[in-house]
Image 1: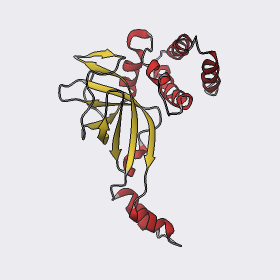
Image 2 (image 1 turned 90 degrees about the horizontal axis):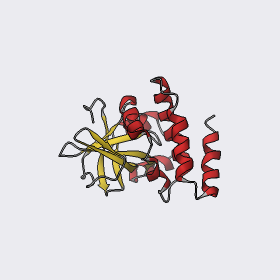
Image 3 (image 1 turned 180 degrees about the horizontal axis):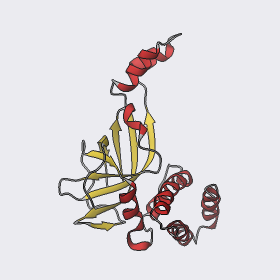
Image 4 (image 1 turned 90 degrees about the vertical axis):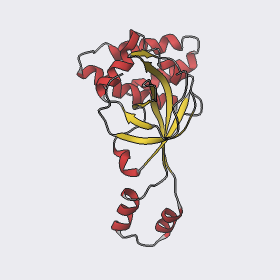
Length: 203
């Protein structure tokens, strides 16, 4: 959708059309957060967009040894966090793609490939993607998600997107997003109530 402006935050480990997982180093975790919009550029120059749904840090043999020690020198901890490739995984829910400068809030025709670079989208690209079509159609992918905290994901994503839109003078975007959620959940009142209760925490 536009030129790469940011430093890659990871490389893909595995993927399908609906979701993908990237690996990264601990020192690269200062930037990505739950609900952030990320993208992967494919070989045909199309781009797959997704929202971060989970960041997990697994242990390894050295971590277990360090954790079991009575006293760990600070330099050991710093070296382990910044110089070694710890098994950190970023899980991403696919919410759309772009091809030939056109944005689609649909699943991509094909998934990214292993070792493709994962980039964090800046505010300008976040605004462009989330406002495309004016209907926030990508939100349906979040509501269809299983085995993830949908309400927390919505709060994290919408709060970030709202700040970006407000900063660019689009104060109506968030209200329109809430209206879209009400429309998508109109036949599921219990879940709608839960989502609205969660979003009320943003006010």
